[in-house]
Length: 373
Ligand SMILES: Nc1ncnc2c1ncn2[C@@H]1O[C@H](COP(=O)(O)OP(=O)(O)OP(=O)(O)O)[C@@H](O)[C@H]1O
Ligand SMILES: [Mg+2]
Image 1 (cartoon, rainbow, N blue to C red):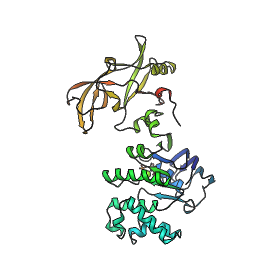
Image 2 (cartoon, rainbow, N blue to C red; image 1 turned 180 degrees about the vertical axis):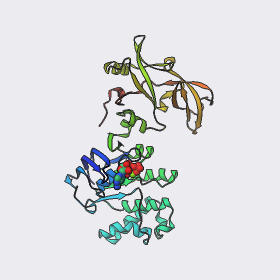
Image 3 (tube, rainbow, N blue to C red; image 1 turned 90 degrees about the vertical axis):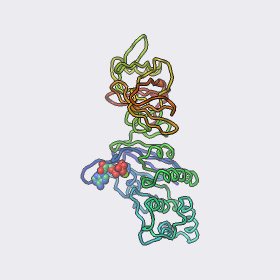
Image 4 (tube, rainbow, N blue to C red; image 1 turned 135 degrees about the vertical axis):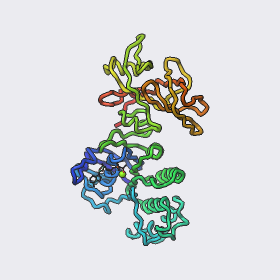
């Protein structure tokens, strides 16, 4: 397996569009690296440059200490599953999966062993004699993944490999991919839109926006210490609530005011706000739906006019308004809150995030932990 390094990598397409801007990233051996970000932010372009399917406009790509910018895709020893996978229509599932090994002149018995093992993992052992036209979309996708995992390349590149699967198969495959990663000790670079996939599979997550890396960190760090409002809003589901609030000093304490509500910040946030010169200015207050409580000290209370209640079984999501701000609050399923009524919820003030209005940077890092870039 391998380590990869992207140094100042940029991609400008022929029409002049800059899809990837100055990406710097060290991918360690055996790492399961996730690329996430909104549609069009440059995830596939980055992966395709690593695979060699797209030229790198400027910058360097190193694999195991070797500069590979000019190396043909087939000589990079990487294995890729595409967003739009393709199978050879005239070959059976078995032949499709064996193809990559056959062209590399792998011994027959070895091919057979690996294809059957992969088929078992992917639950397609009973389909090995079928041709692609006789498979469902999800089955085709698993065959495509199978033809990639039978190989033992330097790294696996996967572009939304589970996007065509239904929810149940998706979560099964997620577990299988995780096991596979552990068993093979493989380096994986994986693109997804899916929050749960990113948080559960990734040893590290890279959040991209408009061709630029916003933050690269372990899932837990990204959740607790997002560097800016974009990352904070992107990671976590339902998304973090953002309320514009005035920073004021009242009763010798620092508080956040919006509409007729007031919340006192803890001492760490207070000193951050004072040192940063935020007194008398506006900031974004970020509160995750799960960072509300059903009881708490009165000074942490907010009124919520409930509009919609979503009962999810183990929990309940309340959507409504607090003054002029929209809020989403996660509660226990037995919390009484009928649409049309106003309830009181309590903010966990040790978990709030604060963001600068102009730069949108996080100005409230959690318990003194510094962000990992
Ligand atoms: N051949 C091309 N020529 C010009 N622009 C392109 C080309 N291919 C992609 N782009 C543009 O580059 C940007 C990044 O595309 P890319 O496919 O990398 O996005 P993505 O992050 O994978 O999005 P998605 O989540 O929708 O798959 C997009 O704005 C896209 O329209
Ligand atoms: Mg894509």
